[in-house]
Image 1 (cartoon, rainbow, N blue to C red):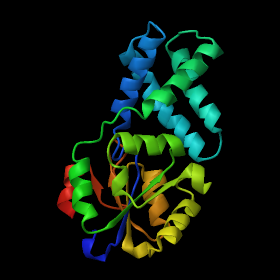
Image 2 (cartoon, rainbow, N blue to C red; image 1 turned 120 degrees about the vertical axis):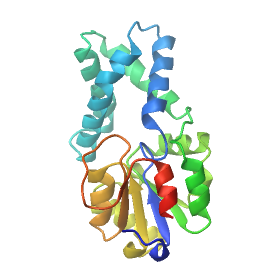
Image 3 (cartoon, rainbow, N blue to C red; image 1 turned 60 degrees about the vertical axis):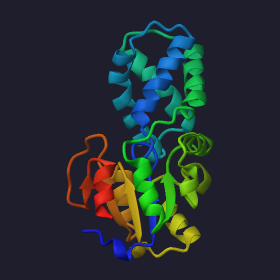
Image 4 (cartoon, helix red, strand yellow; image 1 turned 45 degrees about the horizontal axis):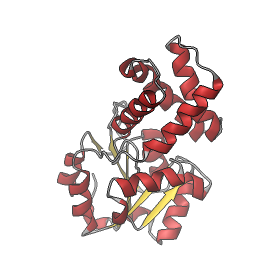
Amino acid sequence: MINPETITDIFFDLDHTLWDFEKNSALTFSKVFEEINLPVSLDDFLVHYNPINHAYWKLYRENRITQEELRFNRLSKTFDQLNSSLSESVLHEISELYINYLSTFPHLFEGTIDLLELLDERYRLHVITNGFDEVQHFKMKNSGIHSYFEHIFTADKVGYKKPHPQIFIEALKVTETQANHSLMIGDSLEADILGALGQGMQAIHFNSHGEEEHDKCPIVYSLNELIRVF
């Protein structure tokens, strides 16, 4: 169990934890497809894209593909499964528009602001994210949560992706925080939870997209459950 009295600093993941990635991503693709007049069903596209995107992010975390390969291949693979043949130039156009528009959508998970308001009174708050640096800052500013966080650690800036130990070590060093007084809250067992626990941090798994249950740390299924923890 988590003892709130022992915690001084709380580190959040961003996508799928505070910022509602699936909702914002769907709205972004809807805007992109309309702009380029692409006759594809958004629902059909997302059924294939979402698991493919998760798989390619795993490869990216493991340094098995580049940022450019992530952005292009997740689209190429999705349209292949839709039996839709698009040129490389069109795929690159979709990818560029998607990145440009994604951070303009501000939707957060229910309870995000209430949770941050509560925690901000008692703890120092920070973000550790594998997302791209500029995009993540735009997301946080446009959704109105940037000011809650003292430090924002992105894989781009640190040079290591979760669950690599170094991104957590760097976060603890910069914030001058003891690991056993720190709490990581994130949606990924592999990247957030195991990464943080490996450095002696406490953790809570916000299981926002149906990962398997486990006994590594407490699991919650909504941010309102987290409010009751504190």
